[in-house]
Length: 317
Figure 1: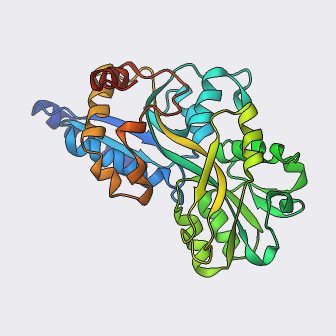
Figure 2: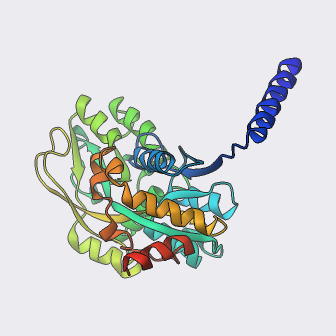
């Protein structure tokens, strides 16, 4: 094993020398997304592919992550170049509020707001859950620990004068929650993502489900402490068996970066994204909502200087 490792390392070194000797220089950049069952993963992959295809000498890779809160922490520790996060979580991270109380992450910078992220509460129809209040005593997936979903859950429950102590909590990724719903091991799950979300679509194909609404007065209560929430409507027919429109709350998905990312590089990536955004539009239904006109919506943190330069050139404020 040791001999094979030495051989492999030697091969990597030789290839590296050959590439340098040939004058080839490749720059690498990472985008950390969310779990493979959510929307961050395909959208992040589409952005990475767009940038790689249109910027010579740059290889951008999208890697699965644990979403918003965890991604902010990765940037804080300089363990990723950029990430997809919820706009409210980015705001709390920068300000040192909410789940980041006493821990300001001041090196995060905005590149673009991408699309609205609906808070979707999917429940098995035979669970009898028709409202958030009905979750009391039920087995509920609240996202992974340290995720933006879990942050949303706590806020939503608070709007209903509830806490996680009122439910039987299960910390799961979108994909894990989907499987447990299909196996009837949990009653409901919270998913914060662009709709349609593949994990919910998957459950609806094998089980009768409902999407639980969040009443407008509760959304207004949410906004009293977290102004980045807004009302959204999930159209009837988005998921099998759910024919009526569902009122819920939404945030914005954002692309953020470490402030240490090279200014010229971020400028070029921002420009390449918006000048070739059709690739993102074709990658996922939610990709069609990624538009230059909403690139600064809900931008509650400072822009990266490279991105800021591009938007100033385009006259976008």
